[in-house]
Length: 417
Ligand SMILES: Cc1ncc(COP(=O)(O)O)c(C=O)c1O
Image (cartoon, rainbow, N blue to C red; front, side):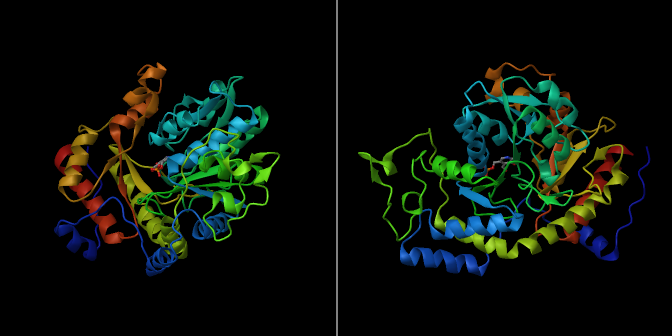
């Protein structure tokens, strides 16, 4: 098999000569973050308070959503968005449909929420839940679908919302990797009933560690605020936020202290002010970050066809904009090398790689007790062995993307010609 010729620009050729570094992730800590952190330290208000509230408002506005509730991690965001189903009759036997392939946090979150995961294989082209297999997975115990926008590539939300409406299911978007994504004009987190984002370091808006849930319903927002604070009965600012106002008018009623009444099984996963300070400053630079990352991603996607049939990636369709989280690569059956061989070659040449996760039910030992058998989720399992991803973050540019393509070319020329 002869590879198509590679044309590098003069600039890229110069860069390609020397070994470059293409680290997987980065974080922006703009000067405003430092000012806000100092402000919080100065007034000694560091636990969940005014800045967290401002961050929630800013994040909700970005997506055009009425509510956002900030939590400690993206896994908590997934778990709380699902745990609120217990207010509407869910039990530990209630099922949540999720893709078999995702970062393990997606499956963990269902279990943290005291619900049962129901796995559905993925679509090889999109790496997202195979929508044609969802209906067959629905039972009378199904309460929700949690599609994942893996690598920022939108799950096919129209049919998912349609199925959910027909079976009266709640849709929680796992949008952990989908900041900046658009599906038919709508941003991630503004399509389903709730959206759950990670704000971990490698993500586009980061609070270092953190997560945030977007929702339309005020009732949902109130339950989420209660859940993140031990399941507290009162969600007024004085009970759940660290503010100067410490008086709760509802506190002592009917012989009970509502502040210390816990009507639901809660979590302890509030975001703190220092994290919110980083998040607020990240919102200021969000558009620039998305633009740089998207240009990097597109540069690679537009030039990837030349690696067929050995390697493939995702494509950006006309109705969508991929949230530029990272760039997935799949080593196809036609290749005479393994994913691990290629990933190790990239690492030796300065390009950091991460695997493309694994089939949670059949390739993650922690889920073995659920009793699934290898072979049940063939596409997810294939990715578990043959997929990886690399960074396209905003500290990288076209030169690094060109270098990555060049290293792939070199590897394929050495191994496949
Ligand atoms: C798809 C997906 N869901 C959930 C999470 C959990 O986020 P966190 O690491 O902030 O808990 C991640 C983490 O990156 C993720 O990739």
